[in-house]
Image 1 (cartoon, rainbow, N blue to C red):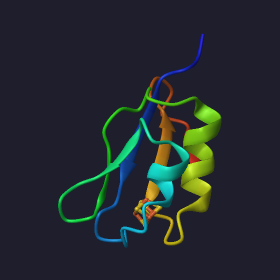
Image 2 (image 1 turned 90 degrees about the vertical axis):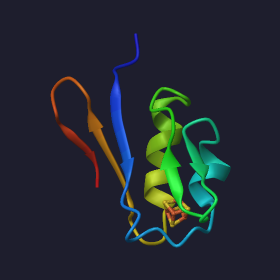
Image 3 (image 1 turned 90 degrees about the horizontal axis):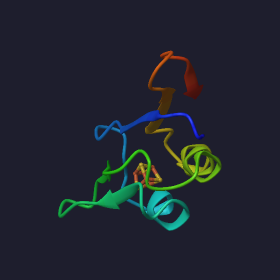
Image 4 (image 1 turned 120 degrees about the horizontal axis):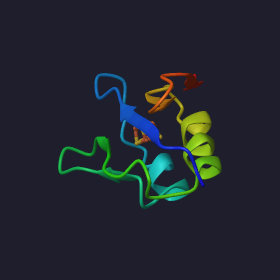
Length: 74
Ligand code: SF4
C-alpha cells in the first residue's frame, strides 16, 4: 500500500506556471489567483508528485511522509 504523503505549496514562492498541475493533475490545482494548491495529496502516485516537486522552477512544493514526518522533497 502506498504511504500517505503530506504535500503543500509555499504560495509566497509559487509563480503559477502550472508545471505541477501538468505533471500531477489530481494533486495540484491552480486557484483563481494562479497559485498552486495541493488539493489532494493522494491524487496521484508518489512518483508523479515528487516529479512535480522536482520540476517546480522555484522549489515551492514540499513533500513529507505523513506518518513519519520524513522529508521527501526538497
Ligand atoms: S510548478 Fe511551482 S511555481 Fe509552478 S504552479 Fe506549481 S508550485 Fe507554482
